[in-house]
Length: 303
Length: 303
Image (cartoon, rainbow over all chains, first blue to last red; front, top):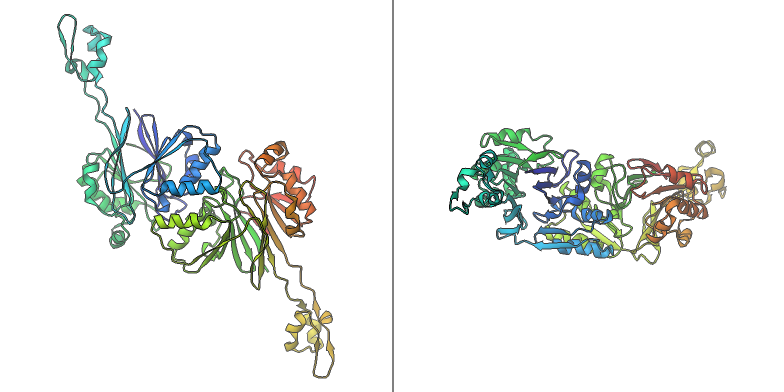
């Protein structure tokens, strides 16, 4: 099963040639999710070969422009390219108003249904669930209401030990029950044990997205044991005071959160335009948390 | 004296790798003007080496996204880069509301004054004038209120015939009067003729911007004798019906307007994403008006 994130923009407020403003494309077992949508995201989508119309869900973290100024253009292009499939947009209060006022002045009626869901940036919980995944939101600590997201696979069925089941003559119609971790009693009253005929499934993977935020330990319960944590690291330690005053984080702070939350891997992004590379971020973060890297536009990371 | 237009985007609603949505940078004798500002304009500005903070005036033609979605990002970046100089934005009703709602949700206060001037898209007239140039607006014919612009140099002073003036001993203090086209009577009662000692100035140049519009002869009086006319040419003649129904123009229609308005040169842009090159546009337009070309992103054209 596939679970990956493609970085469409890893920069911060000022776009650079190397780093567009924040946007990420998450593919999770056939679900296609866009997180944030800075200016120029639609061009990045085309550049990196992402299939625009596959996206069904858009999550916006907050209403700073480098996280959503590209949304109206993206929706317009989806319309112009003939989209009829509905799309759902989740984010803080205000987004609907901003998008609708622009559609109204353009006298535009989209060819597809646009569903807005307002998330309360001060609370947390699961706001989306299907048979594949669940999506949770939780508060970050920034200058405006800002939402963190966690995309988590559903727990999978157990895996049948095929050879053993076949050689013991376990009937096909019992398989689904066994996969679900329940024993079967056959017509002769024999117990067919799910433990004997199945292996446990791999643990559900999860992807946590935290941008923008100050160093904020309150998020740890929501992201604990994530397979992959994306955490903003706008600054290196030299600018720790600036990180604090602008409600951003340093690479070391991102690493501290990753360590305390016992995640498997840390991805860092939202780099200030002052940095040509993320080398120093990685150097500093590795002093706290080894399995980390700075993301680059156009690169896909397995979750 | 310098008068040029740099194309930042020559595409239409759907951006392509080759053509960004509409935006143009006009430099006229020390005045720096941006016309339209599609998504990604700030990146084009950087890519093509235009000095962002020099821009003091922004003219927006209409509220279709491919003509202004990049404005909020541009203003935000100007702020982040430390701008304190005021900026003036001219355009149709609604622009101020759209920009301000986004600034409000971001809790952003720009470090510079942002002056909005609403132009009536149904009327015409001069809305800006200084000692260098005048800017006029006039109505185009599109699906939403859409404004055409004409930027015109002020009439210059006449040029002194230096050698003759020096050899005849014409006093320095008479020069300004002569340049203005007035004779001087010296202390001995002699008439010093401006015609003898000056050459006429070059004719004031003008740049007309018409995008987006149906074929619309009503604009001709406003753009007659322009040095350079930019006229949208979204389609070639094959799609003349589509041009009509979407309130756009074909290359031939742009050429007919150029011919009837007796302009010196025609620049065509706003090409539909279906065209890889503008070759067919030029081929068709030249059957009507010879001095024409299709503009390309990143190219600067003298007016």
